[in-house]
Length: 427
Image 1: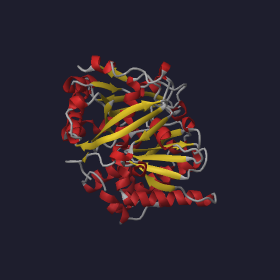
Image 2: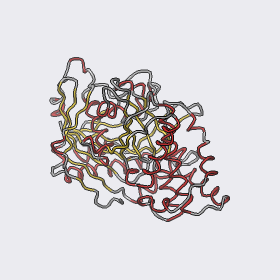
Image 3: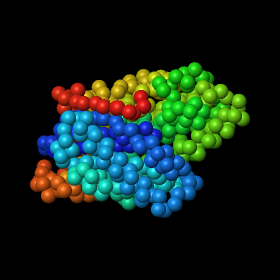
């Protein structure tokens, strides 16, 4: 089966897409990446919804479903362009799996996730493309008592877990999330959002530099972190909260960016010092979270996401991990790009949602309860039939009786080249 995964993270930098061929053999899901691409957001739509995650935002009720329809249309265009970039017509796709765009994630003061909202009407995608769509993955986990995040931990555990060693998998998107996988027990993985990934760095670049990002961390590299501001930021309650936990731009978005700008003025910090400080904040919060909550010190941390293109952030992360492990007298984990496992970093999240959608369609469990804090693992997501749905049903004969879940994911590395397109997307 050929599935096209669509993903847009909290940073709103692009709509990522991955075309993945999948086949189940026993309890193993074999995958092959046919192509991946990134597609720019319609600028006006992106700016309109960017601030909706702020905790005190007021939005007209009519604007929410209207935006959802527009986002659905943008996702449909991205799907068609992604298929074209992979050298095929959209009709060659069997299923589209869409994460949608998270605009609000509601967590109470005790850390319990109450609700989540992803926009991007799946019915519009199905209508525009004629393909069946799997979407709305997060609410089912929250209904079962979970955080609704991080859902990619299911893929991380089954793809990267090893028999003998504890392995970490880190995604540096708008938020940073980590999956910590005990040796020989992938379904016992611990996963959670550590806090900000690129969100504060990008937000401050917009506010202070008038740029969408601190390209390659160049401005931060020229600055000196403020110990006082860093300590004040690290004192925020979220960092002390044990997993399972999840967060978003509600805590680490434009409202905090505005506070940092004001506080840095009081401290008479230069722009480069402010960016250096929030870069260190991301690195320190990740390293501290891994040291505190990993079931055992990880030997390797596989890294993906837009933050991997920021060498200043990656250097700060390597230092922070080394400092944490040195305190315990152990060797720091080796940082490795997920590309080393045959999965391009830029394709990972879209690939992951393609896998989740595939499992939704097949009626198989596609979550890890221990990673999200849910009462039990669930079949996450819902189906919106396209014109191809009757044909698709004939392809979904159960691979095993009673829809038993997969316990291993393999990436076929014979097609590592695939096709890759990021036209029009800032690097």
